[in-house]
Length: 128
Image (cartoon, rainbow, N blue to C red):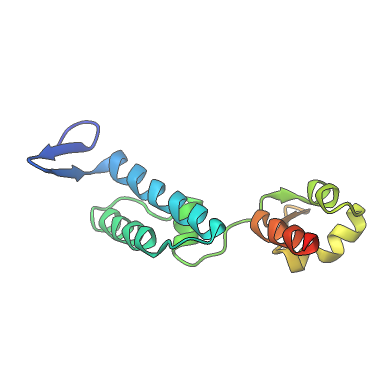
């Protein structure tokens, strides 16, 4: 195998090491964005799962990445600070804390964060 983790054998590309991890992460990014766009994502999700299983069989750590936890069904950490969510919702921070649980919000290290996708969907619902 090459140092980069990419080896071409005829018309086939063999992935290992960092190249395998990069391919898996790309597939997971595609899944996330296709889900947000409302387009089919199942083929990318299947690819990500296969690459993840291959990494596990090769002895590579697969649990460190947030993208892997998401693919494995473990909730991703919310990323939008409550102050930003309040500004985007045009409400006070206090009101934002009250609606945070409905927006996938969680308190992490004493600070509230909400889920970006849930926040966007909530804002789109208010505009309609």
